[in-house]
Amino acid sequence: MAALASDSVDLVVTSPPYPMIEMWDAMFVDQNAEIGNALHKGDGPMAFELMHKQLDAVWQEVWRILKEGGIACLNVGDATRTINSRFMLYPNHSRILNQFLELAFRPCPRSYGASRPTLPINLWDPACCRPAPMSPWNMNTS
Image: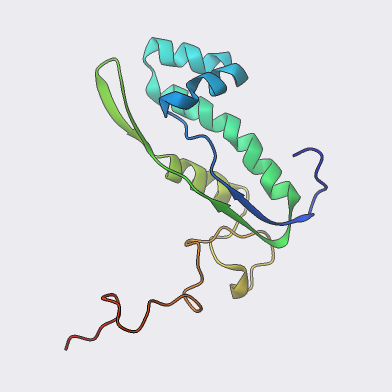
């Protein structure tokens, strides 16, 4: 993203490689050999954090390139993995959300007065995307 000017992008939409999903291990290890060491030692939590440190640099760039009021939309999935007979859930959504909040993204849509890039809680604005009148979510059954 270095080629992009600061404050030049309105919207970023991405589905990053998910830490602790085995198909992405080699890509992360190519960026930081300590990740491979942690995986080899069976230290899943350390590998998880090191992988996220790689992504943190990307999120910093997303912050830099987004215009004031810009929006970042991420498709993020958690991971489950067994390392050395130990099954664990790796909460990618939580780790990434915390990093975005640390960078000062606001968890609210732009239409609610945010003055810096925002991180929507949902990928829709409830004011404009309500369920259809007969949906089970808004039927009055009383």
